[in-house]
Structures are given as C-alpha cells and as structure tokens.
Amino acid sequence: MVAVFYVFVLAGAIQLLYYVMLFSRFALHRPRPLSTLPGPQVPISVIICAKNEAHNLSAFLPRVLQQSYALYEVIVVNDRSTDDTAIVLGKLAEQYAHLRTIDLTGEKRLAGKRDALLAGIAAARYEHLLLTDADCEPVSFDWIRHMTAPFQHAATEVVLGYSPYRKRSGWLNAMIRYETVFTAMQYFSFALAGKPYMGVGRNLAYTKTTFRRARQFYEAKTISGDDDLLISEIAHKGNTAVVLHPDSYTISVPSATWKSWLEQKRRHASAGFNYNLIVRAYLGIFLVSQVLFHFLGLGLMLENTYAISAIVVFFSILSVKYAVLSNIIVKLGEYRLGWRLPILDFMMSLILAILGILSALKIKEWTK
Image (cartoon, rainbow, N blue to C red; front, side, top):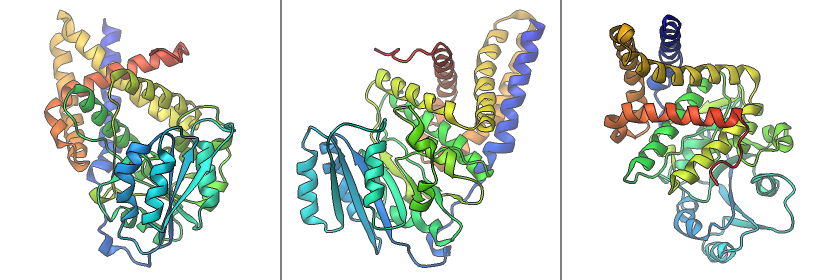
C-alpha cells in the first residue's frame, strides 16, 4: 500500500506540473482584437467536405456564404452522397456566386475524407485555405476575418481554431462539451508552447504550399484523424498561430447517443499512434497520470491507513487543477459546466481508462 500511495502522489505531482507549467499558458492567453492586426485581407478558399449532409448544408451553409469578407470562395465537395445534397447545393449556388461545388463519383482511393479534401484543395483558386465541416456553423459573420488574420504575417502557414458543440440538456451533451474543452486545453497549450501536434477540421486553416509538403496524410491507414495527422506533420513553432477570439468559433452538432460518441472517440484515439514520439510521450504521461490520480486517490481515501493523507493531497491538487480548468471553461464559453466539473473530470478519467484498455487490446469494433 505504501507503493500505491507514492504512485498516487507522483501522479498528482505530474498533474500539477502540467496544469501550472503548461495549461496555464492557455488559461492566461488573451486573444488579439482584429483592430490590432496590420495588413490587408488575403483571398481565402473555404473548403467543406460533405457526405449525405443535405439537412446540415441547408441549415448552416448560408452562414458561411454570408461572411463579412472581401474576397473568398466556398468549395463544397459532395463526397458520393446518396441523399439530396446535390439538390441543396444546386439551389444555394443559384443564390451565391462565390459557392462552387464538386461531385465525387467512383470508388474511394484514400481512407476517410481524404479524397474529398484533395479534390477541394486542387480546385481552390487561392493559396490560403480555411476548413470546416458541413454540420458546423460560424458563430459570427466575422469568422473568416478572425481565422485568417494571422496570415497577414508571412511566416504563418497554419492557424488553429476552436469548434465547440451545441448546448443541449443531459449528461451526454455535458460530457461531449467537457471532452472538447479537455482536448482543446491540450492542443492549444502545446501550440502556445511551440509544440503544435493537432487541429480540428471543423475550424482549421493552412496554405496550399504547406499542405503539399505533407506525406503522412496520404500514407496513414486510419479512417479518421486526417486533420490531426496533417497538423502533426506540417505545424511547428515558427509557422503556427492560435486564434481564440469568441467570434472565431464554429459550432458543431453533437452526437446523439453514448455509443456513437464513444465510437468517435475510439477512432480519434487511434490517430494518436501516428503522432511523433515526443508528443506521444508528453500526452501519454499526462493522460496516464490523470487516470491514476483519480482512481488511486479514491481507493486510498477508502483505505484507513492513508485516508487522511490521500484526502489532503487529492483535494489540494484538485483545487489548483480546477482553478486553471475553470478559467479555461469560462474562456471557451462553457461556464455552465462549472458545477459539474468534479463529476465530468472523473468521468473523463474513466473514459480514458476504457479507451486505453481497448486500444491496448486492439479492439476495433467494440461498440457494435
């Protein structure tokens, strides 16, 4: 039991180190207003890959087409849809001259949405690309302006944005939103520390030239994580910017069931095996310490010998963690999650443990 206690303390110390030394960068980061950014707007190609997204395109695409931006085009790639996607796009194209559509047919050549993305990039008229998904809606008409403002600096080739999920009632929605914050805390903090390793295709920008340098994008066999793998390969300290202004977000439709969401998380976790070794080590240490801290801490608090010591250590470290997390939750507009934070954080550890076990056992279709 002594060894267990020391492992618990070590896990807590690691958590403390990550939150104080790394994640606090994100918590204290202040977005720059547009008025302070010099230079002219660069022409932008917005690319959206869509497969059977007729309803979402009808609901959300007009917001993308009505942005307050001088020179941009919107390219929607219809990836072999069997619903009314083509009809919806045809009607919108009649209203908006800057909407262009591409219809893919035939067999897939690359896994996931890679075929559609390659087609969209090949058709793009402009060097600077901005990506989102068909089920996403910009929160403001200044979305493009915010997400592409860093391109005014010649060194910027990659821009990482944030995409929260719509607020709905229930614990599933709360968990999805918390996991989104939890993941954003990691990749934004690493990016701000000069170690970018992922981005979300729901809100992401980069240049054509940078994209063409990627190789892992074409070679990876995973059906998801295209954007993670691309960013892990092309992004670095000197070429990557982070945009966190509330008007720069795109809001997404969340999963409706635990099964679909957990399967989505399993697929996403599989892409992490393709990150470089240093990033995998940093993330692995953090996530393992998160799981050990919660489960060993709760176990020791139920054991008479170390109960008091475990309680003191556990809640002392949690107080620091939650101070940083609470700031990040408010920064990302998820302040309503605040009172659920202890429960959601423990649930996050449980989910991480389950995903870790399933990945170790190489179970691929566990939700069926």
